[in-house]
Amino acid sequence: MYTHEGEDVFVIDGHIHWWNASKENIKHEGGEQFIRCFYDYHTGFTPEERQWSLEEYRQYDADRLRNDMFGDGHADMGIFQPTYLNEFYKEGFNTIDRCAELKDENPCRFIVNGRFDPREGEAGLKELERQREEFDVQGVKVYTAEWNGDSKGWRLDSDESFEYLEKCAELGIKNIHTHKGPTIRPLNRDAFDVKDVDDAATSFPELNFIVEHVGMPRLDDFCWIAAQEPNVYGGLAVAAPLAKSRPKKFGEIMGELLFWLGEDRILFGSDYALWEPEWLIEAVMEAELTPDQREEFGVELDLDVKKKIMGENAARLYNIDIERQKEILRDDGVSEEFGLAAQYGEGATADD
Amino acid sequence: MSRTQRVDRTAVRTRLDRVTDPELDRSITELEYIDEIEIEGESVAVSFTLPTAWCSPAFAWMMMTDARDAILEIPEITDVAVDLRDHMHAAEINEGVNERLSFDAVFDDADGDIEAVREELDEKARAARQYRAVSALLDGGATPEQIVGLVRKDLTIDSEGRTTVRLDETLSICIESEPIERYLEKATATGVANGTDAGLFVTPEGETISPSEFETVHRRGRLAATNMSGQGHVCANLAEARIGSASASD
Image 1 (cartoon, rainbow over the protein chains, first blue to last red):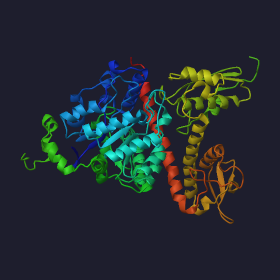
Image 2 (cartoon, rainbow over the protein chains, first blue to last red; image 1 turned 120 degrees about the vertical axis):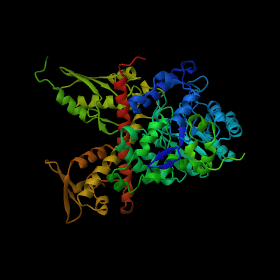
Image 3 (cartoon, each protein chain N blue to C red; image 1 turned 60 degrees about the horizontal axis):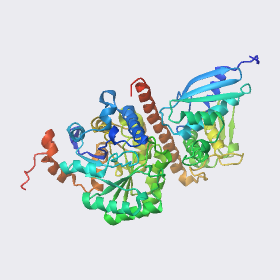
């Protein structure tokens, strides 16, 4: 758990991956381009002494992930957001079944989300049912620029997509995380346009739409949609690293997000292993608005707001009672491995 | 050399100063995208490197064609060749722009029409520039009611870098021209404020602004500016990493 000025901050990292971009797993040049593009973002925003080599970056094991997340990383829990990219990777880039292996080992530390692709028709709907039954998913990650045969993307507001969103509502999968953000080679920039979230969010008020990367480079379109749709949220992955390298700019982006969405609809995400949570969480927790920014936007980025962004907002979406969760985490394998029990308080010994 | 008058590098650079990265609305010279300018008689060759090897091909295309057309405005120049370097689609873009092919012909699986993309980005740039122009008017003492009522002929731009703005029958203010001129450039490009009686400022959707929505429209302009400068920082970080890793092997 992160401690800020003597106060505990419970961190749910809303966006993490356990990917495999090893050369053996790549089946199309797009797979190589994709991981190299990720690596460009990694080196572009990671302090030099914390950068990984490309080889480390292609594939990392469960021990490293646990250490980077919980040992060094300040996070208390992490939400896996699968990204399949089956056209590029033989066994997928970051699949639910793979992420679920980690959850099996540390059930209280991870939330595993599912995914869907409306171009998969009936089979995809069945697969969604399987994900709900087998992994009890409460959310899905969707990647509208993913390739599928000749198609180079799909829209969240299409009839086919609505059929899947209806299925999500029916199955009780409430949190729809959608990558709406930076272009990633070789995917099409326009297939990450955020505008299709608008109609989907209006049509499915019972679902929450978490726009990952706050739409950047379309922060303006995203904020304007979110200002009108109360069930639209912003995930900070990719915006967060600016807190380290461009703190003033980060303050301005936070000013806009707090102005248009408010403090209850912003979720922290590291996008691990794009970046490690340790330095990233520290940078976001240290971030401050300048006096000019506070006046311009009329908002605060104080500790209470940061606590919401770091964990409380995600806890609400995923039905986590943070105080109860601390008791559970105190005695789990990760706490034992990294000696974290004390930070979750002494409390009464569980009698089961 | 058949001509006695040689074109100098400064003249070419001045033209290139006016070419912008469409996503960031900043000059490609300020962003340091230009590697070299070579002038030989009536011919100019310009080489470029963008922040990443995978920057949008559509944006690269727009910048290359805009650069070519801007240099061709110099009367002495008859021939311009562009050379985009270290880009995944460098060969296609260079050939397409230099041979004057259409974007669609070169990228047959291109998503969307390049002119539509340009219009959308121009519109965002206009909104961001409107924010700066309106901020300057507010700082100069104009009220929201006065600002939403302004038409093109209310502005008189002098040669000293000052603009007189007629707010109503009796009242005028004088402010710096720079934000106004920058705004008018993009307004003209997007078909706003064309004609002496045309409204000067509009909503991001291109509609007349009522006084009650002034504040929201102004904040949306600020948001457009935040978005563009934010993306500018992302591109700058990527470019720095690229320079840093240029010598690294595989």
